[in-house]
Length: 624
Ligand code: PEP
Ligand code: MG
Image 1 (cartoon, protein in one colour):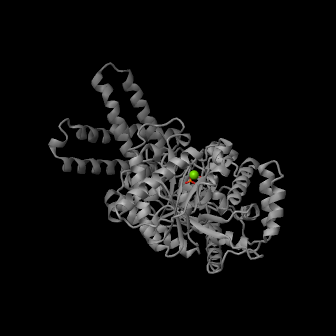
Image 2 (image 1 turned 180 degrees about the vertical axis):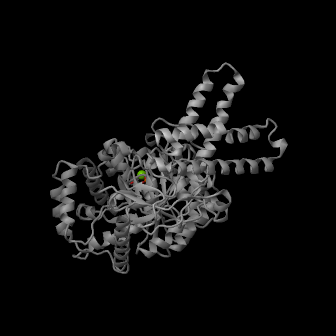
Image 3 (image 1 turned 60 degrees about the vertical axis):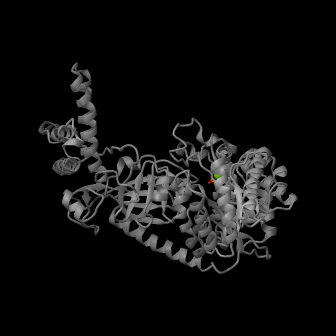
């Protein structure tokens, strides 16, 4: 795409102006109609990443960084130096206001060492301002970059002096500059994504699932993230919340500024920063078309997922929080095939009470009426951490203290959850399943814990459904390989292709550096899936799939052909997969699956899936 300059109005917000408008920003964005007078010329930038959540979002960038500030570096023109200095002075002014307020609040007793005064002096030091001014003019770079350089030089100088007092001032300098930088980049303070005040595109190096789950979903229009891949939990949450997202952009946080116009194309994995007016307009049209198409697909909601030869396929939804029930029903979900209960623990802490859990599970069951709801027991660990339990970092968290391993070694936590689940079973059609089971011994231990919870409830005369179906996830290769044994112990299987792919191929599902090696359609993964389905059917139990492969419309023909009974996915993906299934016959799918399983490379398999889908459906974009 051609990169060209264009103009956008930016004006600096004073502290009071920002406060009056309740903006989390230091920059107030005045208007954009495509042809404003040139106040500040910026070039359009384009970033490629992984299309992690479909849809198109257009909005202003909100830079979010939980741990450290990412300092952008970009060139400026000589006439923009004064603009950059205005930004600097404004950020310093707001930092001073902030410190004055802290000083008033804490009083003299709150600051016996007078460090606030020291910081105020440093902030207003004319020498630093002069240095920044001089350097900007010389290097013609943005003020954040220049300020960071000036501070680094100062700190390096202080490191060489003998005076211990002066040496210690390096910490204060870092602290003060951090405050100014945070005003320049984030509008000051640590604004959480729950505190947003207006619609934004979140641009971030990385977002923990706990941040994603607590963000204000109504105000986050889109997400662009340097790290991560399609099956990270942040991507999964974005899809659940229907927020277009592109992950694995690598550098976008370094090149985007607070308030820049950003387009996130979650269908193709493209992020455009400061798009030219014509591009912006084209994307507005695309956005409207996409929304229209989604609406059209929703008209399939009332139709059953039945193949041409009359085979009924279960189409279920994955959820992370009870609020999603509404969206499941709106997208025609027959039930919930995976409720990731760990998000309740992430939200409330690992000690979340039996009562709070019971109410959440009950709410979902009642919300779904007579539709079945499969709740997975706690799958904490890996990338889903709660600080109380995971304070020391593991070298290989995804191979470490996670899911059922965590539960079996913290029996109190597990027992409380099992009690809450069983009690909730009295209020709907509950199914329970265990995550990350690796073999018979682990499944036996989990079933024993469940039996103990049942015995206790029975002894206490507490009502629960004694026939609640119990299943296990198949997401560890060893479980797939011994699935013949496991199938005799449970009522159903649910294949978790996200982890099954990760563990079969030894490729971290969240590491964008090796995301090209993460191949859900690797023949090795497909053989395991085939084996699991065959073993389950031999034992007379049904098999669901709740990994992201189930939501890929291209994969539907293959999975149908392999005999999969139920598909479970983000609610947003349901209509498309239904559309595909309704146009297939079992016979055709079986023949196709047999031919695909002969192929040796995932690329060949993907090409075959692509070719099969192409032309038959208006849109067949991947959701995997
Ligand atoms: C999976 O691994 O495919 C799965 C559904 O579980 P999660 O994504 O929560 O690890
Ligand atoms: Mg998993």
